[in-house]
Length: 93
Image (cartoon, rainbow, N blue to C red; front, top):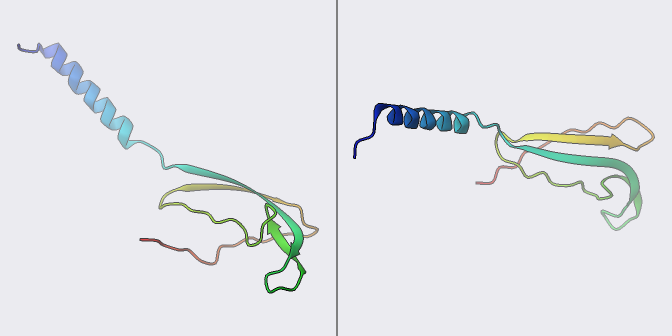
């Protein structure tokens, strides 16, 4: 059974559009919401005031892959400005 030329053309167009849709996919997004507050911590067995993120010390881990887009909303509930920086990256193979 032979396919006519219009069916072959429609099939080729469908394959090309499908490949274009797959290749233009965007990298995944990961969303986080952090509330920064003061709280009591005892990292060395001595109670002291520390900075908590979502009520925890140390703050949460972020597990992501290469090219993940991270959106982190940070809400500062401290009495002073707060600087947040990343000092290390861990690579698991």
